[in-house]
Length: 97
Length: 479
Image (cartoon, rainbow over all chains, first blue to last red; front, side):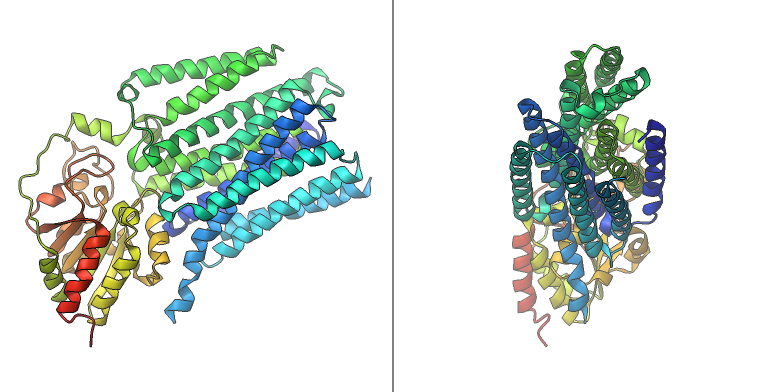
């Protein structure tokens, strides 16, 4: 990938992010923040790449592994906690009727 | 073109699409839960795509597998356990902690690549390419470190492990932070000039900058800071994407970064604060000690639970104002029992939700939803404010700053300008509170001195339990 096309990717990704969230009800501020936070753990892919490309370099393998651990802590924990919050909202419609 | 290259391309495209749909869905109540799962699915898909790509091209060494498995199991396990165990009241701290770890991950990736250049970055190292490589490594380290230390400080402050040191409220902190910022810039240029050892300087100074910027912020501003740091962790991920040449990482990181920025803006609006004043204005509490913190209460009326029950029984319309104290006391279920009794007696009950009640926007909604409070009874501030004059009783439960009339009347107050709930317009206001201590902002609450306000001292849960007993004695809710 050339640098220029990566810059295009960055630009379009940012524009997409700006467009995605227009009006958010206050109820969803916390879950949205925590969900987006889980997605930012996507650096786990970078950590994986690091480990795969380490070619037996042990210190690099360890750095990659620790980084992967941190990222997955973010991803798994983030999605679970968001689901826990949202589960409370979705229970309501059934109780209403 | 190799087949696995095509497969990865398709999977990446699909993952980006699903992530975008996920973020979009998370902003609507109905679709939020499915959207969260969709995003989680997209993330696992992206991992499968990456691993299958390497399996199909360079192959993955056994040794790599071992370290991948170790890292994944430990990280996922701790994440899952924490997510399941943590009480709903400490949600903001938890999000901050997760966020910090995401930043740490980006920081480590960049650090690893910087110390041990991996194969694809040493090949054809023309000047332009190596420059880009170093810039993206520096940005990843800089933003990652700020995200990490900033989030950890935010978490520690919310947990009450850290208080706001006095010096951080003086002008000194701006000077200190500028020194850190300039030092990071020096380290940055030194690094690009080929001096690899200055990477450690960059790590240290940007970590300190993260602490220096977050430490002075306090009070109701904390959620905004967490949201901003969340946006940073997206930027850090995008920078890491440049480091390892991954478009998926760049798109996802940029999306989170931009969406986080919008959310931060929305939250600031809810509190009538600008982002600049949140970041550089210092904490509300420290200013208040100088201006209006000295005020003494002169006209406190305290009353018993019995009187409170009698007044409630005679009411037609009751508004409940929940706050952080309710979350701490875990009294949401008890509160629901009280309001059920009132409703059975034909009394109209509504919950007034201030945008920043609790420690995070949406905090109260989550809490009350847990106690099965119907969604339609939760009213936002703008909707409920005109209703207060026609309300018989307002029950303030563990809320403080969000019902302080100073924000409207006293231009010298640090709270001035913040939108508040006009509870004082109601006929009677009961404030259930453990003691006379000030709210999170540390400011005296003029509401408590008003003649139509009565204080019911005690733990929210205990008072509400007593209230249920009293209401029972009065025959409320038992037809």
